[in-house]
Structure formats: C-alpha cells, structure tokens
View 1 (cartoon, rainbow, N blue to C red):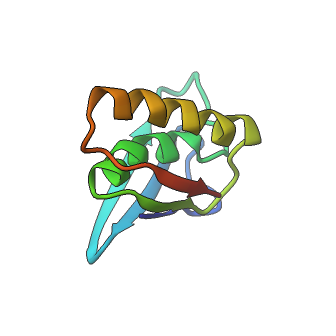
View 2 (tube, rainbow, N blue to C red; view 1 turned 90 degrees about the vertical axis):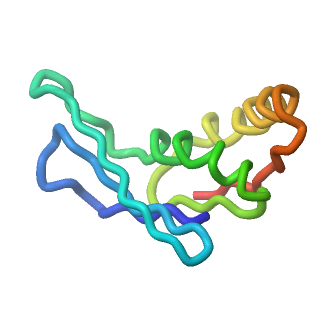
View 3 (cartoon, rainbow, N blue to C red; view 1 turned 90 degrees about the horizontal axis):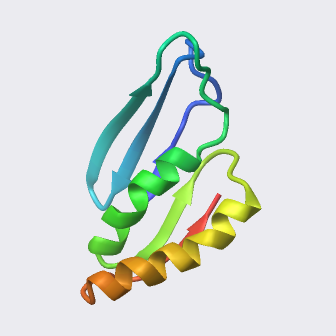
Length: 96
C-alpha cells in the first residue's frame, strides 16, 4: 500500500491523502474545527492504513511525508497486538 499526501493542505483544519492498494485508489479526508490545527506529519494516515494493509496480506506500507521515528518504532508493537487478535493478519514493513 502506498499513501500519497499533498505537501500542504489549502486549509489548516483539513488534511487529505490517497491510498493506493493493488489497482484500487481511495481518497481519505480528515477535518477538525477552527480551534485546532492539524499537524503537518502523516502519522494519522499511516495508522489508518495499517490494518487494511495487514488484512490484504502485508508487504510494504509507504507514506509520503513526515513521520516520527518514535511512531515508526512503535508500529511493531501495534502489529504484534493486531496479530494476537487475528492470526490471518500479516505484518507490514512501514516506511516514510
């Protein structure tokens, strides 16, 4: 799975990405109220694509954009938990 995100959203309260999986493409949007401003990193999109990628057979999960090393390091533990709940899930190699 590949997650493509624009450099900057036209509005600070919204963010969007395109998820590419095999031959399918899915657009994902997030919005918040005017008080909160979404950060520029892409961790929320990586988190939302993780389970789908694991369910589709694992492999490579790549997000274009900034993701903290702490977040990437924690994905192994999250995948351990998911796999303990459902043995059909396959681990992914996540990169940014």
